[in-house]
Amino acid sequence: MQQQREPSASESYFWPSVWAIGLHVLVFGMLFVSFALTPELPPAKPIVQATLYQLKSKSRATTQTNQKIAGEAQKSAARQTEVEQMEQKKVEQEAVKAAEQKKEEAAQKAEEAKKADEAKKADEAKKADEAKKADDAKKAEAKKAEEKQLADIAKKKAEEEAKKAAEEEAKKAAAEEAKKKIVEDAKKKAAEDAKKKAEAEEAKKKVAEEAKKKAAADAAKKKSQDAARKSAEDKKAQALADLLSDTPQRQQALADEQGDEVAGSFDDLIRARAAEGWARPPSARKGMTVVLQIGMLPDGTVTSVSVAKSSGDGPFDSSAVAAVKNIGRLTEMQGMKPSDFAPYRSFKMTFTPEDLAL
Image (cartoon, rainbow, N blue to C red; front, side, top):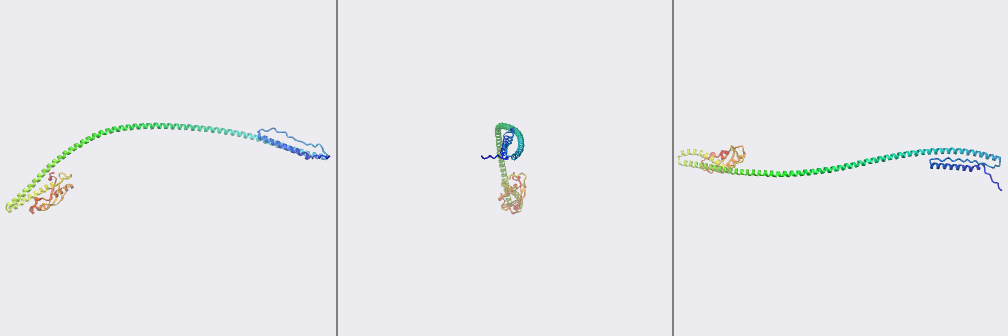
């Protein structure tokens, strides 16, 4: 039968050491998991210290060696246990510190959460108050706008009614004014018609009177002209008869005397003939005088008429010139002696309205 080999001292402490270390690792792991899961630390588990004893020894030397090794192992285990205890204490302290820090952090977070909640509530309350104020302001603005709209409508209605009333009043006033104007226009027209009728009657009467006066004047003028013409012809005939029936000396004396009379009668005849062809201008007035320069031929033809001295009124001067030119020829001057005609070849004659029976 083969003898079984006894394990050495190192081999005898190997597995117990491994198991001890594994147990410590397990304990540390459980502590860590427990610390991570709960803020409170579980009570520390007792450390199991295993001491291995060798029951049998072959020799004294071996026994001493084993004892020495066992002592060293025990010391090592004790140091290891002390280190482990210190580490465990340190871990426990750190765990406590971490738990306290975590607790503080949780309290701080709770405080911050509380403050945040309070701030949130305050902000929400502020927002609610602002929203309420905004809603109240909006409602007030809407009410104000509605009141303004109603006021505007009322104002517009009042203005329209006032305008309508004013228009009605204006129409009424215009109608009254138109009616009044029609009456006044009718009265005015009647007055104007009466005035025009009276003026027409007066004008007609005046025209009739003027025509009557003109007819009388024309008749008087013609009678005067005829008388002057007859007187001149009678004087001329008498002068010729006297010249033919008397002695030569007597005939010469009578001719000279009758020549002067004939010359004067021809002046009157020229004025009378000029009056027949004279058209009185509107500007002619009594007292106007124009001196005409007249040229004639022995047969009594008027050859030239010009103004020697103006009256100061051009139309009157022109009318006098035209009146003398319209004579054309005085047949009564035919047969005059050259000595009697000599003064009429070129002479001056004064022409006035009085001379023309104006």
